[in-house]
Length: 356
Image 1 (spheres, rainbow, N blue to C red):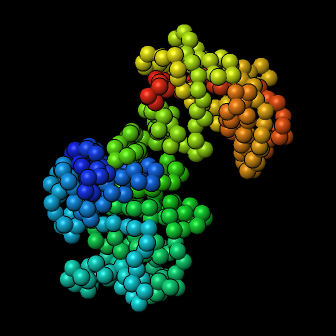
Image 2 (image 1 turned 30 degrees about the vertical axis):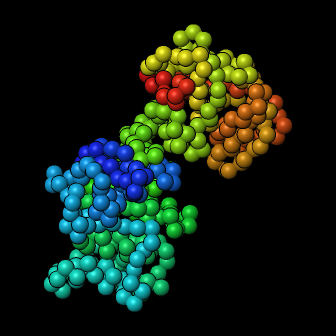
Image 3 (image 1 turned 180 degrees about the vertical axis):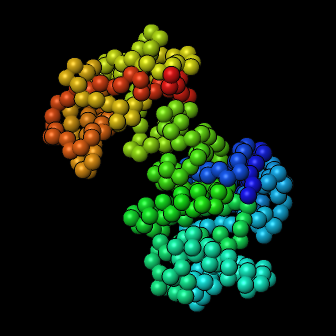
């Protein structure tokens, strides 16, 4: 197993720079997730690490070995894609063993490696089936198994669950978490799915326009986003963002005149114009709360309810309540934004608050 180091990695396609000087150190046996909107560079970065794309500039090290100019076959990595890429005429056993067979490994060694991987992924009863006889989740497990038999230094996953339905995604997410604990391997995982990122990662790397916006454990990014982009990208549903103005050191006034206070540590100068962020679960209905609104839509999901509340200034906030809300649409409400969870961002989108 091995760690992976990126040093000032750049990638351009013609005159378009898609990766803009990325520096990152991934520790041995760490599970790192790349997230970001479509076109942000996360998949390109994965392909650069795997050798499927050539870096325009910078260094890529795997296990302290410079592999920047090496082809994929010489990097000792395994990639798992969203398309299963299984040979339809080969059994599960032959699909999984194919990389070792092509490498000229003895039949006995191939058979042992396939059986070991099948045991890890609970594929033992499926080894003699063809891909057409498998479910989507089973096919993805076979694709993962094919990567395991090679005993790579690290695994690269490029949105491997995006072709699966919601129930299978949950099942396979658990399978991948168990796989990481079992193999204790370095894994880099690209996804746009918030739940996958928050539940699988030791650290999340947030990409935007070919650059890293923030790196950290999932809860750190959730509770202390470095800027507006991370604040609105990490977390589902997304953070409510409202325009306001600062007055005094810790007090803020929204556009409708509501006054708020933060109990979080301020890390920079508070400007007159700010953006105020609050997550839906950190808004409480309170008859004496300073923020007034009218319930526009109620979404009851069983364990939770989501209230879409129109404020007097014309903006809408999302409020999360436990259980089934008894409120009806068109109900006037007053709300309190919990001061220990109030985020403040300056005009450039930089966070000015941290948890104490």
